Length: 478
Image 1 (cartoon, rainbow, N blue to C red):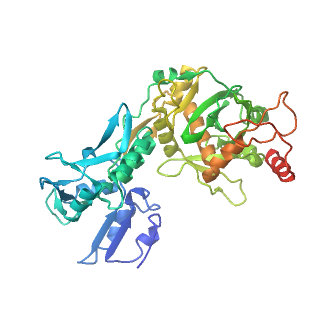
Image 2 (cartoon, rainbow, N blue to C red):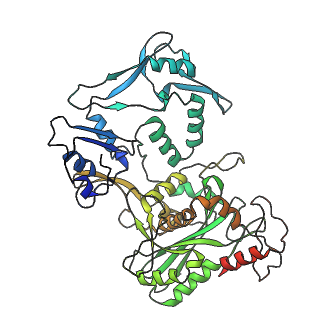
Image 3 (cartoon, rainbow, N blue to C red):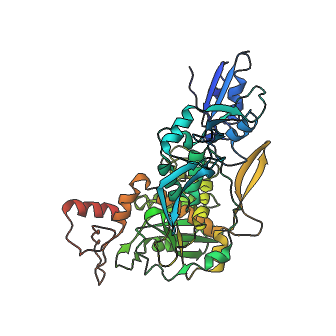
């Protein structure tokens, strides 16, 4: 048995093999190095065997780009049919047949049943599991040498419908979460809606807040910095629980990025403290500065001198990759490290959250909601939603990419993406770090380091820090 990574061309093409098992093929890169499609490379290894077997397995991804969807459509498309316990009608289990009570807008997942598509009888979980044991595979197409099989979570003997419905209700308000649910629970590809967002609709959600009166939902502040030829643009964003976020302020520093003066202005801005409405002080805990333009060396030097403040030099990378890669990269030996940011993934997240509508009648903001201050301009919002998703052919294969229309600007979107990446740099420590991000304000504001709050919900009186806390504050403030 040989186990190789899909990104290792030498392993994929090293020697003949009779059976190939390729797992999660929709997560593979488009090319294994410079050798081409990794699945095709692996399949080529089986050509010398008359009794070869190739098995592709995957959770599907995006419609039109999914390898497993394309392979399934070229197969005989087998689905598992189960008999209705009442009328005997055989059917493949579909999400559309799952029903539950929804009285006065209050969903009750515990009432979920499966409805027969023929007679309408409602099945309990036990009846559904019994029917599955009596089921069989049925092909929708003619067998031409490739057998394809599709299953979803409704066939699982370990999952109750109430659990599946609960997961759906938690995901349906956030497109990024719903995409994951559709892919992993239904086993279906995600079809992007028209990605263009209307700037006018976002302007109507302006709220009365700013850097001196940040709402209490905000527990962490980060910044994203975009370097242009004649200026530097920077956005400060706040983040709270349940992926709640919001723009705090956007600043444009005019000047030549090759000169130190403009970087001094940016540094002073990053050091500025935001004040929360409950009196807490919120410092910018992390910042990402794009090094992909014409001022790479200036960016690297600026970030090198401020590594202790979590000011990162970053480089945007397209394609399917995490928003934040914890391991730094170096362009050459001894060079200043920088971090790769999955800008496509981050833009998906930003756009998905911008689509979430505000709550009604004073209800709490829905999960993933994006707040905007009332001072936001039409120009800023136009930049925030300037890019669109297109499908282009690259070396004969469809490729999904974000594209900026001719004449449009996207600095606001880039800064939002970089601020989100800075937030993601906290990783799994994020919840604890959010609590630590809130600091007590004692009026008048003292010059010495402020004591941290004991809770993000209540601002308590400051107390003298312990020796350990003093050392930690000294380390954090250097």
